[in-house]
Length: 314
Image 1 (cartoon, rainbow, N blue to C red):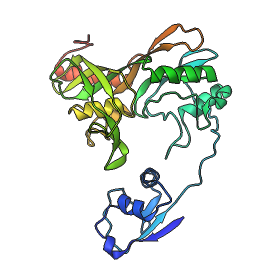
Image 2: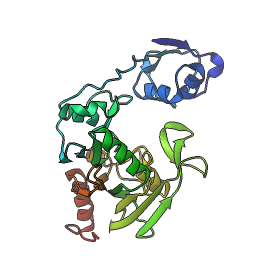
Image 3: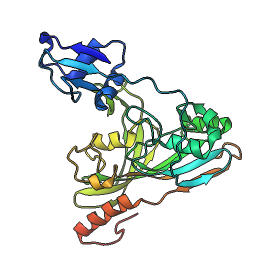
Image 4: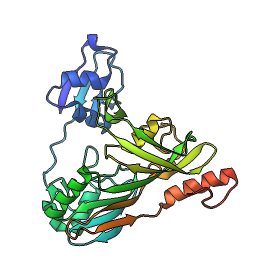
């Protein structure tokens, strides 16, 4: 436990910025995660990062011990689409975190796969065994993991070469001016919030390209197909929000007061995935149906329009 006192001349400063200047042994990202996890308390009460200090407060920072390097297997049910001795393709539900992180030490996809296939423990890093790409917690759909070193090297190389194909379905706010388009805008850390990503000016982020196509249009929403040419963190969510059409249910990059809480995540689904098998070099293509949570949202939108079924789908 780290105990601090806020000097009177620091009144008015944001908690996260003052803490970053006061605790030099921890990174800004680490401090942000501790605040988000409620492990930073002011006069005994957890506060948000944007809390404005008044001066004279007592601040307690609870620093958990570093996690064990080895991930413990957990018997969690998996929806396996394909598996052989080299790779496993999973249809991940929304709400399941891919690997351990701040506030998500247990109940991860990585721990579930480790229980299912213990040999994956030595593939990749100890805390992220077999993981070559990720899906956000609130996003559902297809994800491939490597079960062998050969597969890990092959899949990471394919991702770097951009030969892995990924197609997503998204329901967004608003009606796009064009039925299809390309968003080519660099993405990097948000300079004002290190837990978020943002479109940055040239040189301030890594190149990110998302292609989209409208599948169905509603009065105030659109259903899109999005294809990734790059794989930046939160890419689709950041890109669509940057052009004024955030994904429904996205309280981070979209509307914090979004009324679609029943989604149990964001209206984003990794519907198709394709790659070369690491050993046979055969092209593998997989698809995952739209989950009920998004089907229900689409049914509600169609009902408002007085139509039924998938009218307008391309």
